[in-house]
Image (cartoon, rainbow, N blue to C red; front, side, top):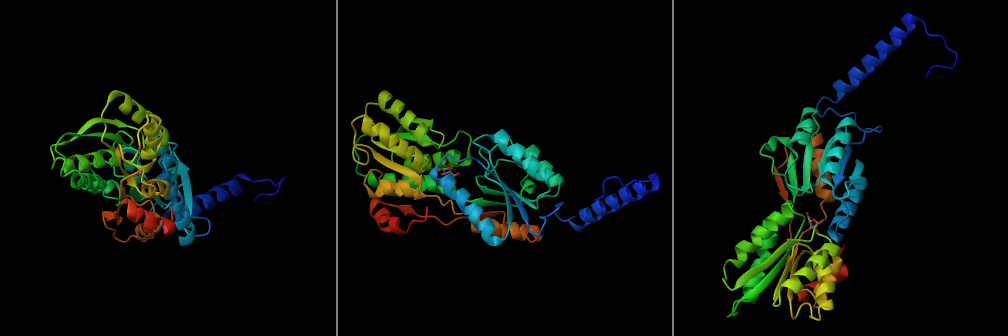
Length: 333
Ligand code: AHR
């Protein structure tokens, strides 16, 4: 730092600039594997773009990532995109500018990522997808995907229903609350469920609409379903939160959730498990939000230039009402 009043000669100024350029050049060489400046204290710097806080699942996922980063000694730059893809793209561009070591994000939708992923690749910053996939044809744009098999979750939900209704002689009317339009879990869960229920032609989806993975959305769309469909036997909600919102609409319509209408959801967060244990939900296919530890592991490996699997899937189960009662006391989220 120059003292106030110090006079710099032209030659002196040249020397200072040259030294600065040399220092910048050396820093760039030292990080040529990732193009990163690294943290001030030598810590790995991870830029993470989260979708928002639309559900209990998302809150648990955010907590998991923050806690695991702290435990792993990784400096986390966390951005909440508040449910907007353009904010996620902006956050990723900021991470590139800040030269973080690794970028991870949970893409709100499947499409529209190629340009920004290419920018990260050109800047030599490895990207890890967490929770949701993208539909980019060029798989070299990211190092790994960490998350659930959403098609399987939908299939497990559908298979349970097929088993429950195997003796049904007439039509079983199903309404479906889809997740965010264009998102991987909405697309895949719909597909898995439809494939499974095709085993019984009595099982028919009579209405299907997005409730955007939120309680408010679930309530509002369920109200419309109830008005338009005099006979609803089953609700399949793509997450607990929409199912919980729908409970309010069902009760307000004078029906008993879990009895008059069979309710199947996905996630198994605490509030959903409570509704299941209380007999208001009938079945939940689990989707684990606890991705933090596995993500930090992948971050360390990609930063070290190690090979990582293209896909890392989380282990998940399913819950009946009895199983929810048993699991609730030790449920972490
Ligand atoms: O992508 C995972 C899904 O997103 C969860 O099932 C849902 O609750 C969340 O909002």
